[in-house]
Length: 443
Image (cartoon, rainbow, N blue to C red):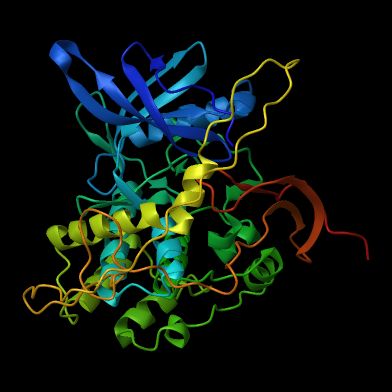
């Protein structure tokens, strides 16, 4: 259970009433809330708060302020919008656009549970929208007092499945600029010199060699995202494998090995994005997006917003009934707030989910000759109600690789110190490498 900073019903900033906890990461929690205005005006928003034990940290406060400042300069349909930023007795809070739907991580887990993989068209369409959001961030500009514009590129540095939001309205949005770096002096990065932060499994090889984050590092991370979305597997299965691959400039296995059914152009584009050689890798998010757009021209499935919205609504229905979705709901459950001296109450066992009785499959209606992206029901998928087919029962659950923060000797890639446990897939957790402080060990 999560020990929340706030509770349902709390009013933040005098007008944002918290409804339910939507998620919690290594640094912050996110709530679904309602903006309350005059004459019964209501608007659903997301309220993000620093976790209680980090709220007194000057470094985390600065990171949170920077996230607010950076995201506020971005205005793009594929980037989560910032509405407000403030502070109350419990600390800083950030008010963001609420995106109803799933994360790419949720979708991967759902498809894994049902023993399926997304179509080339669905994954490609998602990848294009992520890259459009990144391209906007990389080409960001600030309007000066005299009306002129000055380039102010922003590098996300944390592109991963948990930070890609798939809306039931058919739009993909990039979230969580908590680790973003502004390549502009007026919005400087709070990361001290010699330190690199990010999720290890999605980090470009050159970062571990001390090179600064760039548009190409976000391209690499997006390549990992697409590889994992298409295969429904982790590209790297543990810290040791990640470190070895990155330090040796090892080229990841081609996605074609795991998905031989994909168009050759799609496999080639993903492989190029993952090339450890920056001279061979796509030079920009825009170049990668254009390569994926060329793939879509050869695929017969529709990828317009209406079609994507339908598929995400269907997936959300299945997610809420899935084992992964129910586990996620239990993880978000709030721990009771009790006095330190009081004995801890024993939480009752959660009720077992009702058994899902398979319904007789129904033939899906013809739809312009297009294929179904997500065939979770093995035929048509309902927009409401429970799933019409049970998930595939796996003999062994696919476990997430263990996650630890590592201090590395960059010459030998030998782990030197294990520090606090973190979750590489949580939206806030990061891995820190002390690039400047670590010295080559004596022979």
